[in-house]
Length: 229
Image 1 (tube, rainbow, N blue to C red):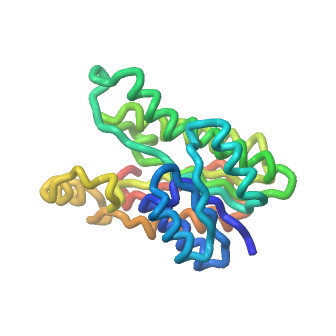
Image 2: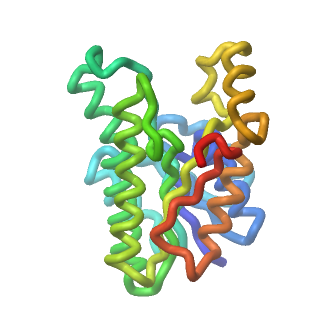
């Protein structure tokens, strides 16, 4: 049985990824930072295991991969978002988002590559449409997600036997977008050619596709309903 490590597994997209991979024969390892209850419930439901780690901390991230053992795929979903104008942003706020969204990916990818370089594997970094086109009031988030694209492309060149790609969801119906009013959601959906928000399950299916692709590496796969072409 193949094993997949899903970071941010207690979140909406991470949870959907763990379930989709489990339904397709993978043993999911669900990483969580603070939301132990949801992560353990998900692990129980999918026949996997839940492991705690703070991926912004190098020692904690290294310990996660020691506990996880051999993995065949890494789906990195961990991250946070914060809305604020650049001039109102403190250096601490900037670092928190960059560490949670980009530095965590560095630690996770490095931990995965160190073992996958010997037997091969798949890495899917979950970025964002805002990393492709930028986002007003989310400069730190957009910068971090753009960094994931560069990281994925670089890893694809450095380690050819580890197929590494970046998945860029558009506007997905998750709690992260819960700050939007119903009217704002309606207006935003009208701007999407598909006419609606995406679902976490649709993102998970794209991650599953990339994890099964042997001749796709260093690419950016957009799951955005045509919002950014």
